[in-house]
Length: 165
Length: 183
Image (cartoon, rainbow over all chains, first blue to last red; front, side, top):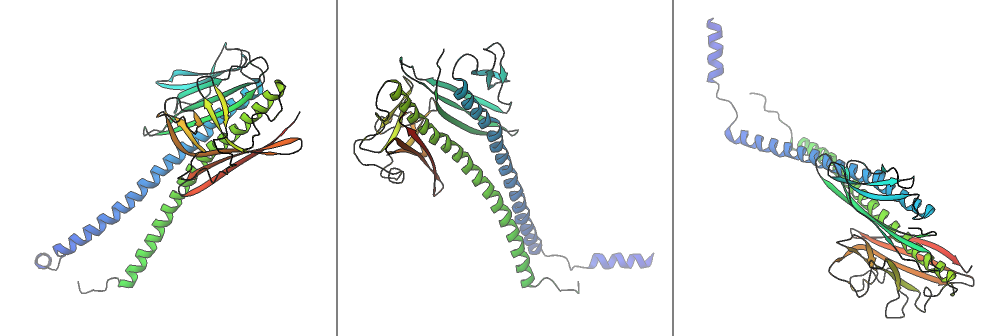
């Protein structure tokens, strides 16, 4: 019992701790280090989100646009293939819809993370001896789970052979 | 507390150096992937704009043929380079050779003093067009420039559609070519 008491006394009497300055310096270094590491993690995470959105645009949106352009080029703007923009497809997001059966049924071409702000077809009005030309404008944005948006805006112009509308 | 052996300054410096090399390389990698991503987005749009130029000239050649005109009518002037102007009221495209007879190159018409090849974007309707004089407040200048050049041969013309886009300080150029024949 006496032995333990002596040891406790020894520990409590030992004044050789850290000085306030030493503690402050070490806390400051630790703070800088931790904020650096967290900054890097945050930055990497943010960029990976942006890369993901960009790849979604390429895979989901640009491919729909390219398909639409080549489809119109092949079949023209007759009634067998119809593209349209429909509002409130996915809650308040608009989508591109396509019909491949003269407009009796439509299917969605874009996904729920994509909002289409504009899908416009500018036809030239052909005279008697004229090819038709159509300029297609498609724009909007893609939104990730953090409600961050990335815009896209595509335009293509194609000469078409038949014009029935 | 008798042990006063800490790290030497050399050891500290080496560890900081290693740590910073690791940090910098990770950040550089992420940055690189970001930049190349943006660049590929832009080059996608540039390719579309270049192929649009080819398509419009082809359309004009076809219409010339259907209306019994020379196939190069309105396409081949003394000026061998032009821009394409979109009219969103009647949905037509027209060729604008400019006032001078100089055949331009994409590099000469995309500078800070002469940006006559610039592509503009409508803020309200979001279409892309070019223009030399009718630039209203709805049209904002983009980072893209387009010039169509035409070379004449015995039985055909070669149409070259060039789109230049600014990526940071770098200029990137996408060029598409098409031979149009006299049917």
